[in-house]
Image 1 (cartoon, rainbow, N blue to C red):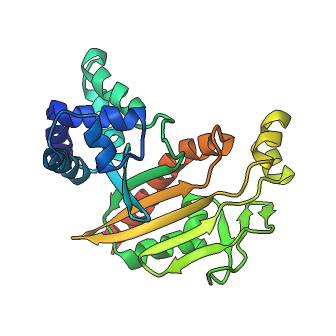
Image 2 (tube, rainbow, N blue to C red):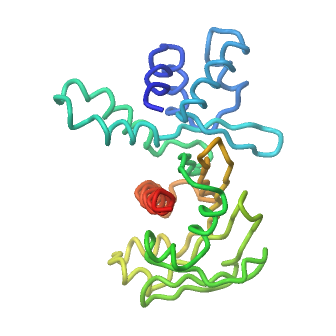
Length: 261
């Protein structure tokens, strides 16, 4: 995968596309073409290379196909290579890593894609079974997983439930979606939020977390989409910082379980 990322970044037009998405994320092909002096077919081919390198993730909204930056490959390169080179040589990757993780999404969604060496069935279990979620997330979700059913969050000694906190979609091995939890005083106390932050997050509407699973050879392509945030959302900022290490921990757990067998 590293070779594909390096090849994708080697072309100036593809770097320009990444810059455009960094400036305004979630753009359609038509919008991207409008900002470039090249044919639609050429832009489409460049986007396909970026998507093949996992630097761009696409999400359908009705009839529109939106393109989002994806930080996962840059995170992987940084983790693998950054300590082997002096600071000037890695500054490019550090800057790009920062850019790919920047809070610049036009529709305010958090979108992140990674590939996990496992099966859809095992990854699904890791996303829904408390004996797994307790290991990498330190929580378990209590529900019957029927769409519309209540979902109760248990985070150590803190339990969170409330109106609208429900399962949205449950299509085994392909798509899971549920509303995020309410921001209660107990939750805020557990994580030492100050009064101002608690007041801000407690007024925000419930957001939605979705997980799309797709088998790709001997791996599963996992796309996490967290949506429904207001402009300037404090919760959006919090989850964008939390999802990346959480997905990394999920990936490590599932792949180690896969290797053990």
